[in-house]
Amino acid sequence: MTEEAVAPETIREADLCPACGSANLRTLFHGTDRLFATTTKFFEVVECTDCRLMRLFPQPTAAELGQYYPPNYWFAPGKDAASKAEDFYRRLVLGDHVRFVEKAIESTTAKGPLLDVGCGGGLFLRLLRERGHKVMGLDFSLDAAQTAWKVNRVPAMCGTLSKAPLRPESFSVITMFHVLEHLYDPVGYVEEACKLLAPGGRLVIQVPNAASWQFLLFGQNWNGIDVPRHLVNFKDKDLVALVEACGFTVERRKYFSLRDNPAGMATSISAALDPMSRRVRKVPESPGMRLLKDGIYFGLTLLCLPFTLIEAACRAGSTIMIEARKK
Image 1 (tube, rainbow, N blue to C red):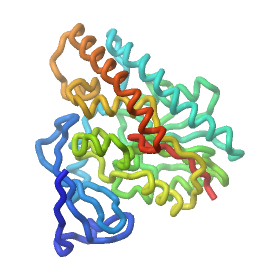
Image 2: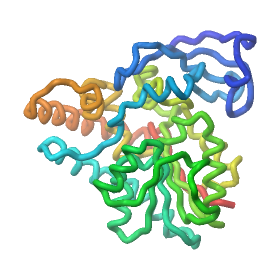
Image 3: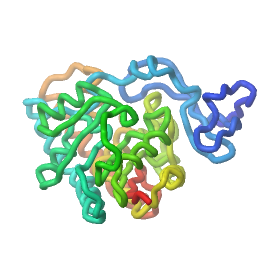
Image 4: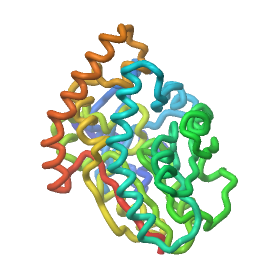
């Protein structure tokens, strides 16, 4: 990584550090869309020299940002053998998230359904519903919300959390898996979640952890940076400080995700093998070649598993998942 100071006088008010308001920052590196190749433009990733929060600088406009999200950004199973194998794998590794969230459900006496913000195609919600829980999804993408309804048979709406027609204090648990790092205003989303949760309700958040060993190892090629879609790159301490400032008390932390940590490391090593990347970029490949590449990627993921378990045990895993209680 290369580091260089950015002159404070060149920074607009909108580009001040969202955590501490400082204009002092340094450039860590430049990067482009390594995963989906939606653009050839290069972006800066900077770090606030006062609070050390990392972020994309300057942030793209909403119109620009929309161009960096492919229409099939989430997973919806197809009927071919490779899609069925991927669906089976996703169900298997999502069990890790389901178990974490079920403990949050069991730990609260708050009434109401669970709301998953950024629900994508709704597979996570389907797994919870199959275990007897009342669920609802919200996603900015209309296609994603429709997929949740049609494919996974779970109720979902299209919109943002701040503008969704939802009654205050109507949910017992709100989950946000890999949502906050994509937002211009993560503080506003967490504050809105606090309003929507019943007293004593639980907020579950997962983001990539920029204090991980994987970031130190891969730098700008770390999958958790995901230029240019990740506007803010949280360290675990940044996430904890955010939720506590918004009216929550952190109850649990988890630095390992079976779905995300090993596969994320495999993608950092070879983005060209990532199944979603290949699908989004429409890489021409026969069914047999697709299965072969998926098999190689799965093997690479398995090889990454021991390392990701060790870094998580040292509280330096590539993701941080927290359960926070509304005060």
